Image (cartoon, rainbow, N blue to C red; front, side, top):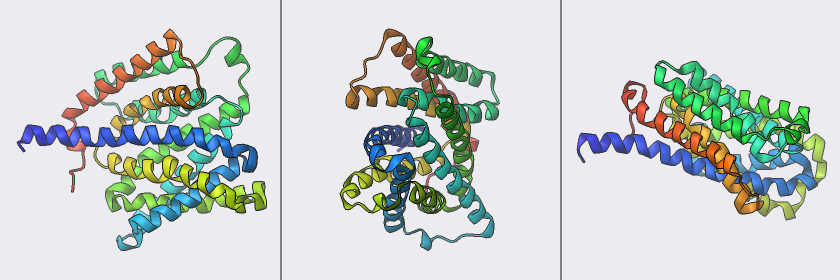
Length: 295
């Protein structure tokens, strides 16, 4: 493999992982909502994180990695951000439609992309992504009827998402994919008391295990492992801008699982987001100094 092909592969590989991760997360979100009537958003978050932590601990075996006090501190913050992101997002889904919640949550990675920008062209891609998001958010009566508490939860999830990107990259550089296992374990420990207080013994219902495991794999174990690899192979601002595709996967998930129809305006919004992501990917090729070499 020549140098050009190797460079292209090093760029496309993390992008592919990120796309798979986002598709998995949105599919898992649709499945998770089926648990809300039984254990609530709090209990669903707890089940998701507990089962995901068990899966990741068994598969990644993070105890084999060597940690320093500094790396453990970063992993702890990463885990808290991950838990808060999951919890607040599910809380928003109780009263805010999935597509709108995803769009509001995206303010976090969009802020990362804006804060980290160094070239004028980056602002063009960010503007395109922001335009697409604004077109995706319903206006008029629909937006007026949005629950403000749900909106606040979604925006809070965006703040946690921004911290997840920044500290996840730092933690991943130190300890690689094993960081995902420890991060999810910390998130589970952080969120579990909230879920237990809300749902109580309902969390022990054996009938919930298959769905909970499915949610854990689709929403946490698989995508966060893939994202951890992607985070260590691209700049934080590129990751944040590429994450603008998330509402696209939300819309597709709505079509497949919730039978939601898309308007022409929504498709135009999706096209703007895809263009922004493609542009960010192409221009990031010059930022090789910020990429972590593959093992």
